[in-house]
Length: 571
Ligand code: ADP
Image (cartoon, rainbow, N blue to C red; front, side, top):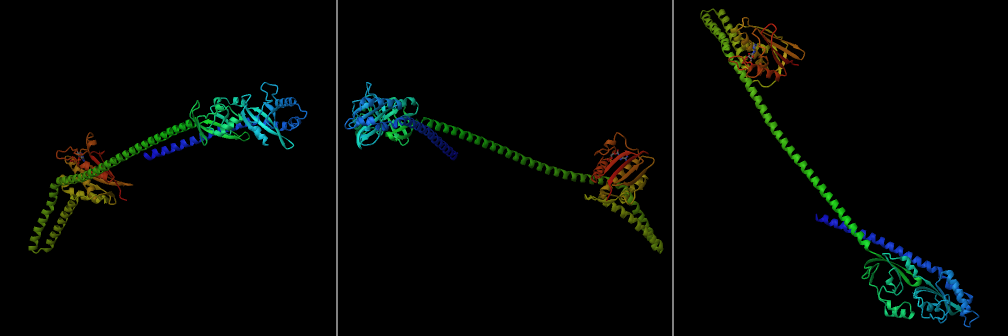
């Protein structure tokens, strides 16, 4: 913050400085222009009459008038000529002085204020002319009491100074044109006395205190009324001035140019007020602008900060959300796995339940060959004892065949009971059906069910052997249940392929399925049997779905139930 403040202060200082300098130079330029215009106006007035004294100095009558031995030149005639020339050139007074400074002829000879007979040897313009130097001189007219601009020119006769011609111009009327401008305009002589000014009370006051010598010179030349020559309350320093009193108190910018011929100087004092006013304005504006910039910057920064915070908050919330989703996904995966495990458990349980139902008939199925084996073995013993060996070996072959049959059943039982790995492959349909029939053989025999199998050897489905067998066992058990009370006990299993699908049908001669329970047949725990679990069909449907297939139940057209399984054919 502190460096920013310093920077702002720096910028402000520069703005102030630039405003100060530009306005200052503008004001000074205006003052300089005004001073130039003033110099031009004075030059215009003076130039009109500048050559008049020199020309008159060569006039034959004037020369005759000033000759050591006065010729027949009459002063009055000369005065008349001077009056005429003065009128033609706009000169206020035109007069001729002799070598002692005495006025011999003058354009105002016939007026009360006539110069004729007056001695002007005390005036420096005469003294300079006597020394051979034409002169420009400003002074207060001793008779007219008006400011005059005097132009003098020596008259030399035979190389001898014989007198001077002087033209007096009125310049005080210049002041009238200046008016009371806020700028102060001054024409100041070489000693510092104010001659012309647009501040009337300043006339004949000085811009700095006069020395004694300067006062003496003024007194001797009767140039100004000497009692008025008091210093003005003004202080010059280089190109500025300060007024410490009067109506114009304040700081000023000074522009000055010399009027070399009349040994004077023009001063234009322009008030420095606009400089300060402009500087202050510029600085106030700059402070305002800087404040605005700072405010916008702070505002934008705040906004950016809040946007950033918002984005951060969103990111944080997204993270939390993602984390929750991850957690939830993990939970779901766990739940899924548990469900799968539970389903696996359920399938296994259902299978074992099915086995439990089969156990009685299975025991019977196994008991039969075991009893037969015993019979054959006992007979075999007797035949061996009696030496009838060929017959004994026939008996032993029967024993082998019987135990073979027991082996087949127990092998299937073992395979069926094992927990199936989730490993889908190619399963030939006919052997699978035969295995199931082997397991069900006891029950079927008990019920004297007539089973027909019409499944071609080449039908191979994409499935998992143990589980597809579980489905077939379920269907066969339900079919046995259904036909148990029927007069005609028939089960028909057939299958065929149609392109990518293999369709297997299990039909029974039971009572069929009541229409109102048909929609709920595959629901878990739906059963119409007193000892039923209601899981067989629901598990069968899950298994078939897992293989990408479908199972449907319906009533066969010829009576009884019909279960149709569609499974994808192996490639
Ligand atoms: P459970 O056999 O334990 O009852 P299932 O899910 O295997 O369970 O069968 C559900 C019900 O579907 C049976 O209770 C029975 O009412 C009906 N059902 C199944 N198969 C047949 C069939 N072949 N004929 C008539 N009804 C059947």
